[in-house]
Length: 318
Image (cartoon, rainbow, N blue to C red; front, top):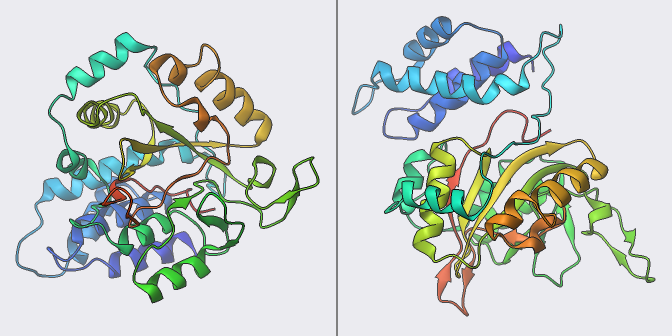
């Protein structure tokens, strides 16, 4: 399907206002920009494509969606004849230690899940459910292999298969997911054991996990609200672990393991790294780091792992 055809399909898929229209506007705007259209043309097309509903979508909502899409897609566009997406460069966070962290917490003081929900390009449902897990899977191509399970499981499956399983069971029974896709092959750990979800198995170095176990939850909400609202890091996912911390998936889109080790292992999580200085969990430095799968109920905590913020962009699913 060509970019123009994808754009027409996105326009045709816009539902009535009140039925998910807001989220669809951003998707249509993304497709229009990738098709090489002007903002004015995209606005006219979206306005004409919105079905009648219980409310009229204001012009500002459409222009905001186009502006947001334009900001997010700028790093992915080139002057190449085929307009092939380029990997976004490693984020350069304007945060350098505890003092800056304290300022960001102060700036976001009082923010909670609802405030982050308002910032989300895709609005999670009010109550955590298996749909949170399905929303996360939208970040991946159907054929990409993912690890979902407990810390001791060994099975990896294509995204399409995980999606069918979760839809059929109407629940997210597994506690963990590895944000970075794997190659589906077993790799020697050097001790005679094989692993499908080690660093050597990572096929796409797309997300770095960041969490702060040492911060009270209100301060974590405040911190991430400031980070996202000020666009200091390209946060793709923010989820509540159902325990004491929030997990952020920072979009980095690095080309290989060598670059990951240099940028994430050193600049972010090294001895003098940005996140190390801010008190983030250094165990998150490896590319095969597990995160929590939203929609799973943690019985030992009596809480759901919930999706709070989701910001997919063109280029996530390769």
